[in-house]
Length: 381
Image 1 (cartoon, rainbow, N blue to C red):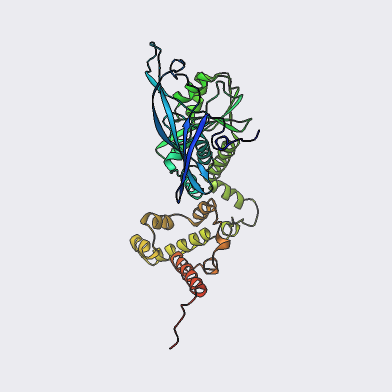
Image 2 (cartoon, rainbow, N blue to C red):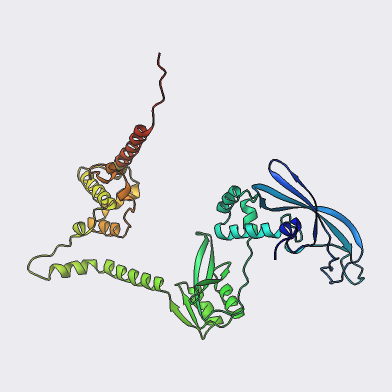
């Protein structure tokens, strides 16, 4: 059904009478007045009959034609004639346009809520600035409302903790594993909070959890019939930690058994097996220099000062064997951006220090900027 007047375009579905339009350089003002039938009292639902007074509300609307739109709406305040009602007066609200204590239209609120849900505070504020919408990050975050939690727990419930502030405050996230969506978020990671949630939301048959003991305690108290299983990530992490711990504990026995396996002694080629990453080169360099300086009679403080290391790090290179140092370097991830760094960094020899490599990288970047920068025009005499 098409619009028959400009009121149907600006205020669809509302009984509003347009009184005037004024335009400035940046804002479009629309003067209107509510003219519908008297509304009902929000407290007792008694329809108002007597008008108490009228006043004007300024409502921010969605931009129109590249200009900010402000609706100056005149609304009526009514008496509530029912003696048993605690309200004496109330103000009429227009459908799809106004609500109590809000200085923007419902349509603009829905726009800003969508932006806040998709982008959050700071990124949403930058987008609103480009869309000519006046909304700060705190206003956008304040529009977010907590979704209603279901009354029943899903059949397969996933439980894991997360850091609201690392080392200080943690929460618990509950996920429907089959549907792949978040069910609820708990304010902490204690067993009492999780047990209270399980008691209020029964129905979980399988609970997929991490290694936290608080989850086990809560499940035994509130859902003893549910089956506890470990998720795949924690299962693989437990297996890798157990294998690594066992290999570290029995490393001398494994090495001795490997050397006794044949007539020719088998060497464990840790250096050759490791990829030539920057971490391995740095470990080899520091260990070689620390060994040479210890043989020359240098004290620990002198080694740390000359190599630019902390005393604890220098002591580690002095007292730890090379195989253990390389074994710990193997667990570190290689630099993902090595392939994109300048050749002065990637082709650094083991004799060059990391400080020198960083300096050469900065000098190479400075030279490239100096080459691409145009020189200022000189005035001819």
